[in-house]
Length: 337
Ligand code: KG4
Ligand code: ZN
Image (cartoon, rainbow, N blue to C red; front, side, top):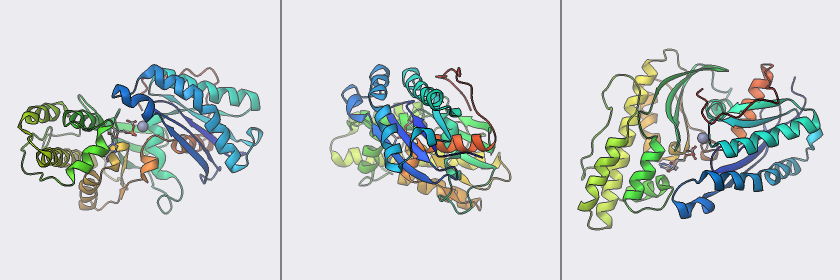
């Protein structure tokens, strides 16, 4: 049995996060600090700046969640830290901090794969009645990852397809930048698309109708770039944004349909990652799931984007299975599921 709350730590990209979960998965406290302000002047995440900001803020966030929950380090049942994949500087900060706590207070340490955190979020108690049962299809749609994953059991993940070039969030960000929108472009592009006519600009629909569930977005980005000189006013820009978003939603739905066919017995379609916040994308995926007689499970946005609740929860699932990691576990910038 897990002897106390589990502390989760996340520092693999540009959010610093800590969370405290009871052994049954109840969220006792959670905190996220975005580094948007640090990276915005550079139009993207700068690894060295990210690592230093994690170092500056992670200890205070961890102390904050423990204070809020009234839990002292000695009462913890374990410490789970993201150990990959991601930017190595931040991974070292998070994993080392977690190991330090584990050594100081004699706690089990868990080196969690960030993607496993996203994959298991849908099983958090309270999110879906009785939790989502294995196997299910996970669509991981973020700025760094774009994959269809068969989640068949704890530690049993099978990648069904992934992107051949850009991740879908990257496609949003690059296209938004071409349209003159601020970084990160996804949310700004969605807002602009709301007042646009998606039919005005014909754009290619990469991979649509092809077998399998791989993705490709670089051709779409090129087509957006070629349309930019035709833009004369705000309405034109909105029309292009709407066209882009509709194509992406259609492509994702097409890929998701094939992925579901590759996982007979799936109990649900689950989405995670920042792009899962997009309402057009959600609607297209929901229609696809429902056509297959399955629910679409989209965690609340704060649990779709990077957070430490998912890391603590993956740690709890692993602790329940009796798994822990050695203190000499090395963080891995590349770590496929
Ligand atoms: O999961 P996430 O917060 O971080 C990682 O990449 O791990 O995802 C961020 C990505 C960015 O590319 C951002 O532009 C995109 O998710 N995104 C969106 C929306 N909100 C965030 N893309 C489309 N529509 C949105 N509403
Ligand atoms: Zn992520």
